[in-house]
Amino acid sequence: MEPQARSVTEHVERVLALVTPLRSEEQELEDALGAVLAEDLYATASVPPFDGAAMDGYAVRLADLPPDGSPVTLQVTGDVAAGESGPATVGPGQALRIMTGAPLPSGADAVVPVEHTSTGRFVAGAPRTEPSVTLARQPRAHVRGAGEDVRQGERLARAGTEVTAALVGALAASGTVRVPVRRRPLVAVLSTGSELVPAGEPLGPGQITDSNGPMLAAAARAAGADVVRLGPVPDDPAALRGALDEAVRSTGAGRPGADLIVTAGGVSAGAADVVREVLAASAPGADGGSSTTDVDVATVAMSPGKPQGLARWRGVPWLALPGNPVGAYASFELFARPAIDRLRDKQGPVRHHPTFAAAAGWSGSPGRLRVVPVRLVPLADDGATDSTAPSAVGVVPAGSNHALSALAAADGLALVAPDVEKVRIGDPVRVLMLR
Ligand SMILES: Nc1nc2c(c(=O)[nH]1)N[C@H]1C(S)=C(S)[C@@H](COP(=O)(O)OP(=O)(O)OC[C@H]3O[C@@H](n4cnc5c(N)ncnc54)[C@H](O)[C@@H]3O)O[C@H]1N2
Ligand code: MOO
Image 1 (tube, rainbow, N blue to C red):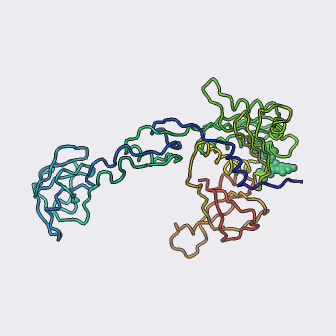
Image 2: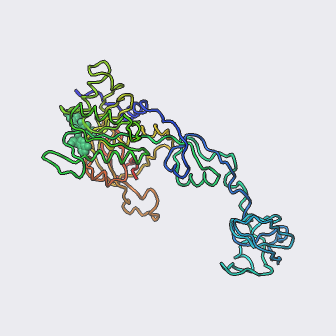
């Protein structure tokens, strides 16, 4: 009899209990894209650092411009360009030509854009000699105030934030050159199965190409980890133990031991299910020693991805995922990715699981969370005029649930709750987005 299946939520909790965040280290800001901040970061300088022009035009004194908007003619006494720091001053009745980004000269408190003046436009490269300009008060001052964007000492990002290109920009603007980040996790990816042949090698009778190895390695990299790929390992306990030892050992070439082991295959009820065998043989108290601890083999209420194993190999957290490739990938997204996030101490935003309307109906066996590769499709013309509205997008299954080709074509994984028997057209469907 099959044991009571464990919920996905409970399995996630057990996965998270196995891993703890890695130590932090300093990294050059320019190399930190995708890393996770280990501390809150504060602006070391204000942005912009000075009051400056937001438009090309004339720096003026508002006191010279009649409040009723009637034009006035001012004497043009010179130029201020971006990057200039000269002691330019605008006196009463005067104006200075000023370019966007240039510091506002003393005396001036507004910029009038050139297109709203008698000059009309500045010609790039041409000498500017107009002795005077006629202009009028504008509704806006077109001045960017010092610290308007960021004030020195203001918090720019919280610990746990993943560094994006925009954050690199914001940190650079405020004078940051090095950032404290979590060390990048090293994930060992290991596929098991005597039928497996590395990609590119000819297949003998009964053999198949190892797709889980390259796929899970790619998924781990996409989740922000470095990867050491081992195997495929044949269905032989000694070979598997050897590979697990290699995964956790640091090598002479400077590779540290893995922070997390992810295996695929051999975790079900088959006679050759070697992962299950190694877990059982080395569980504490059993013969074979205690290189494996915290063993937890479970049937999880999801499909695909039902058989799962958790343990530590010589202290290193080990997620044993099922071999069926779609199940392995679904398990990666639901269990291994949160484990990697925790190693990186990555905090929210909560993983985005938007809801779309089903654009086709489908059924499946209730009682488990069904993970269905789906594609986003425009909904049939429903009279909506705005084709970019979210309601104009729905989901359809991307192909057979167990086919890698469907997974490859999928925009996301629909997560259909265990109590739902049939998904009908128009039903809301929660989707774990993959792109
Ligand atoms: N009697 C039972 N049999 C099975 C059960 C069960 O509950 N009772 N569960 C089924 C489910 S669900 C799954 S999933 C599989 C998982 O089994 P394993 O984790 O032991 O995986 P394998 O048997 O090693 O492989 C399953 C399947 O996937 C192919 N495979 C494995 N590794 C790779 C790889 N690296 N690249 C490509 N394909 C791979 C393998 O050849 C098998 O076809 O067990 C069911 N059986
Ligand atoms: O759990 Mo298996 O992955 O359903 O195919």
